Length: 296
Image 1 (tube, rainbow, N blue to C red):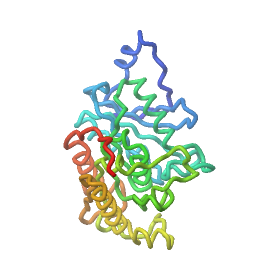
Image 2: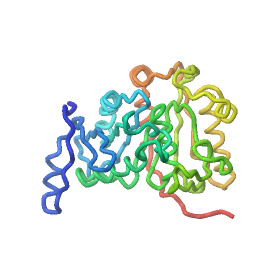
Image 3: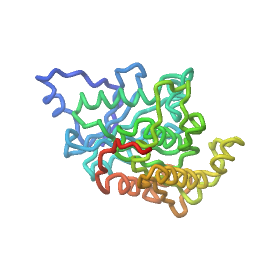
């Protein structure tokens, strides 16, 4: 597998040459592209040897170290083994300072809109079905992943949230990003608990992820969520499961701890089989479409 040295733009294809363009797209390589949308973000794509048009789409979101190359390189073998297309957006510090919280007003371009634009572009360029994605995030990327799944539940088939620093709780009385009450910073977003509680999510955290390195520590967050990533993960999962029961829904959020696991992405991938854990949680079965039934 190789990584493209320069950013490329997937070219729009007419109906006549689209199939030829897709067939010519290299497989089993990490390809670097640049989004044509307003964000102009770069992203990696990996197309398995089985092709993209009938594959599931695995979106991998990096943390604040923005080690997109490492993420893409380490996940690519899993994507090949499972016949999955990888999309890994690069939320840069310059363009996406607030990507973990979806990109609130006054804090740069919206990261949720940037991902949507990338997915639309990917569908056009390689034919991958991007209507419902399998969404993974690590650390800061895990913050983005669970908030995107809560804001756009019908776009997410499953989510795996690994080592998030802190969470948006299913509390309609508390304003986003601490809860799901509407925020003027995200005016178009409405959180529907009866929808997002039907998205299967797995939270993964190392049982030694208890340091405060790069961890948001304020009295408000500590009081609401706990003081370590491990404690916060447990409290959020418990809150999400309790919220599901309050709506008479089956709780679909689960917690998996990694024995001896710390907060290093590479070490978790190489020594604790984080990749295997993520793919086992993502692709063990195909979830049913979300129900629209509302309860009184």
